[in-house]
Image 1 (cartoon, rainbow, N blue to C red):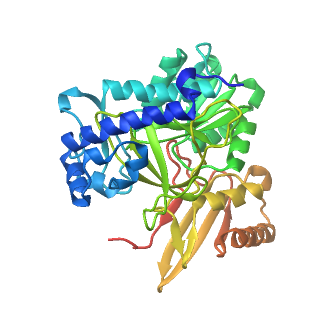
Image 2: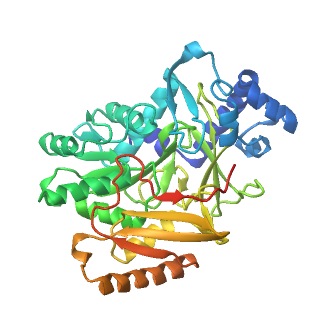
Image 3: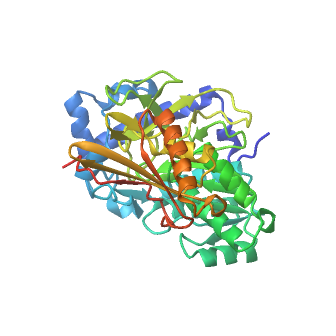
Length: 435
């Protein structure tokens, strides 16, 4: 079982993977210490020298990097090579503060695209396929990563970018796209738009979708699979570490394989920084083993997950991470309770509602208000107020059971929550909780 882009490394033995990682980390720490003053200062402060790192078992001795460090070092403070060696930048959206700019040498771009190619092949892709890349292009890594990966596999690539749904559908149907790459919320919207045009799932040629860049649940996966008639695969990445393709799902869909020959993963206690044993739930930390332009060591992703080395049916031997279970930083604390949007989405889909919702939080007279607007599907919509009120009460109870806190639920008519063609805006927090 299993399709591989680079079988020799994707199915390497544990010992072989460890040998690769040990060799790369020793070189990388020396390289970073000699070339990145910002990180050298952090190492000196902690009393760690490159010769203290003899393999990945010593990574825990190194200092962490956080998004705050990346902002402080902006733009060139974490550059790992002469600027003349770099061929590209990518950048985060900057929605939570100053942008993070990541630099890439040609070597970095090639390795990143190979990681994305592994993901496409794992989803059943080959040179026979037509890959529609509907992630945003430009500074965002989504479009560039899957575009390059698609080329490496030899697929016909449709560089659609996000938005212009009419054109997306026209090209999807006319050019018989077989693999769709975009955010899950946009995939759901495309499914909805096709249905509005009277198209059934069997009318398109899609067989698989590779969706990432925002949290989504198993319920949402099933909903997208049904609306588009595909198998939906998860992909994980972050601009700071390279972009999509850091980890990806195989056909077993029992977690995402981390490309361990390029990225070393740890799970830590987000409060103490202590490394947790395999199988523990905690914050994911990545070390780039061979990046040249922007080589981050022990970067705290803020994503909460579990790592497992359980044998996978696909034959890949690389460690797997669960889908992120929320984040340690954009988790909302409402009336003292930790709330993740993914929990809310799980309840909505379980209760048969669409994944189009918006959470609105405010603080009035020192007390948090918590409202969830939920869009009804056309068949759920009723003009009779009492019917909608009864549905709202039922949903409020289901939310209370899941979250341990009772939100106000407001059901709204179909298509009244603005659709997003990039990352969906799920949370509007009016509280002034930070400076």
